[in-house]
Amino acid sequence: MAKKSVASLQTGSKRLSKAIKMVKSPKTGAYTFVEAIMDPTAVKDFLAKK
Image 1 (cartoon, rainbow, N blue to C red):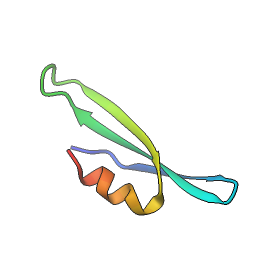
Image 2: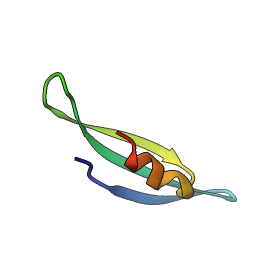
Image 3: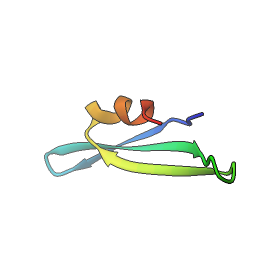
Image 4: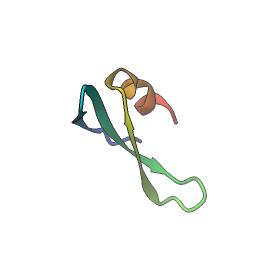
């Protein structure tokens, strides 16, 4: 189960995106959030990974 939240960031001449994914821990069953700042073309791959 993933929650998708993507925000656009601009720093200088580079355009970046911040992606936040909600991941369920197999040990405790609690949900945690994984954040990453990356190139906008890599966002779909990040959200598709488990």
